[in-house]
Length: 272
Image (cartoon, rainbow, N blue to C red):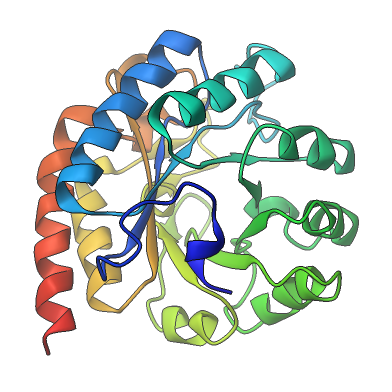
């Protein structure tokens, strides 16, 4: 599998990492277009291959009163509009078998959430759409075990699989990234480091996941140094009022500086 198989992916010959970036959830059309416009401008300037990320619904929530979405079709149509407006590919999570074919009508990459990556029917349904399938490594899984998830995709005849590491549970309320896993998983598929979810602090007593966004650049730099193929970063222009995962998202105003530094690091690594 080569990431150039994704439709509309620009700057594929830049020798850069590719970027999956956008809000945690689609909250509305204006916010999605605003974020996409900003990220497209930055990635075009830095020659970073870019895929807009946004969840059309949120199923893995701590509390029943947490935000889950604005409506499936409404959110998926916004993702399509982002793609058509800015000529970039898009990615969204799916949670049920029936989501696969529906979401595939609107987006270019289907993402399997970490909690669900062992769900064979879900992985197979995503793979059978023919779309690229981004498999998020379960917080409870070893890097080596992800080869079986990748094989499930390939057994359908779909060679288009990615792996995304989003950290491993460390105690009850923290995540940690084991960078030894990157070269292991790169043997199976192009590997992405989910920088922002790796800094989550789940299982909080208040029922809202916490995070450590001040460590985003630390984690991202380490991933780039260790030859990760792509980075996953959730961003928002107002994280404090975002409807999902605001505690660990990067403020949109900080994205350009971060990516500029990361591209400089990647260029240095490429020349070693």
